[in-house]
Amino acid sequence: MERTWIEIDEQAIISNIKTLRSLSQGTCFCAIVKANAYGHGMKEVAQIAARVGVQSFGVDTLEDAFILREILPSAQIIVLGYVMQHDYPEAVRNAIELTISDREDIEQLERVSSATASTAQIHAKIETGTSRRGILMEELVDFLLEIKRSHHVSVNGISTHFANVEDTGNSEYASVQFSRFSEAINEFQNYGFNPPYIHCACSAAILLYPATHGTLVRAGIGLYGLWPSESVEQTMHKQNISCELRPVLKWKTRIAQVKSYSIGTPIGYGSTEKLKQRSRIAVLPVGYWDGYDRSLSSIGEVLVGGYRCKVVGRVCMNMMMIDVSSVPTVEKEQVVTLLGIDGRHEISASEIARKIQTIPYEIVTRINPQLPRIVLS
Image (cartoon, rainbow, N blue to C red):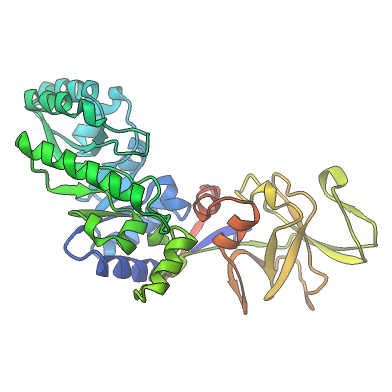
């Protein structure tokens, strides 16, 4: 019996994969499992995806790539984030594909690979307007010439990333980025490079912009049953595009103690909230260390026995308090739903995100990776 845990709905993951694949037929489906699979559990999600035929995975770090390589020895593993140059030998040895964005990295990869008579597989990332890692268009020719000189570096993919494709009210900037990306692809082809994987489509682009799918799509937030933005969800419905995304994650804990307090009693650190009436207060063994944001102090809600219960006072490092006065029966170690459905009510990542003015991505990815992930089939 766990104190605080995450439940992963295997069938929801499978359903989301089928849905996203149906919208991107003819492409390689890459499951993005970086950031501990957006908080869901990298190993658990990757193994489920692999069982239904997914063979390509995207991570942010080389460390995560090695973990995946152990459990998925034949999978395509693409590191989307930055890899330190001293780690190149291990990356090449384990057939990990690296995202590269400058000439210096090509030079170092060539030295490493030639020394072992091996070939480094890379994905060249083009900077088209997000102003993050990527090859600037004005530096592209020099980059291509460097690859031409490198006989142990193979371009397996070309990629870019959209800055605001989730804003369906104005797709002009995304169109500009896609146009720049197309120019870069043409330049690669002019220099004799025709990599098998052309990719720029994230979940929002998979859902709404088929022209951007290329030969590989990167399914991130949609894989976990969460919409990239409310705008994307609304646009899908307006256009009558059939698409059901099922939330994968439930976050639960248990009641540690229940006590009754009189009106005016201050609750928690700083005495920031005082009871307006006599109340039953339950203590939960979960706090901001676990990933339950401190900004939810006095405004968050959880579910107990199908009832909504308000967070009272400040969220602590390892504890928080809730008002269970409206719940008919409350028992020690009773299950509490922090995120998910209980009875007729649901606490969604979107709801929590709105309350603290952030995005659903942050709500799920910040759940402590040390909490157990339990897969429910």
